[in-house]
Image 1 (cartoon, rainbow, N blue to C red):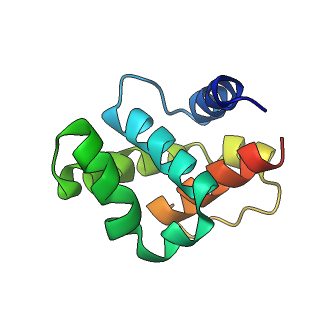
Image 2 (image 1 turned 30 degrees about the vertical axis):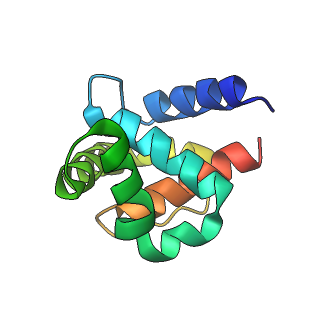
Amino acid sequence: MTTSNMEEKLSIFLKSIGISGRYKGFYYLKEAVFLVLEDEHCLCNIQKEIYRPIAEMYHVSVPSIARAIRTVCQIAAANEAQLRAFFPGFLSHGTLYPKELIEMAADYLRYQ
């Protein structure tokens, strides 16, 4: 699968769970997913290995990246039915953590 094809599939997936391009977190989340696709182990240290490179790329602070991604996680968590459509075994525990959403989106692309 080509990078542009993967980016298009990721955008469709994110929009289908309620995360649109009007949120900065949409773009940051896409970058995070591609970082995870390159190296899955970066999920072990999300602040240093995911948020920091994205912050440098967009010339913003690491807390700004974290906050924007948390915002889109809340939006996705509110669309629980859509998440279950993509991930039937998804169990909601009231909130969706950034690490979980990044991993889910990466898995979605990986297995398409």
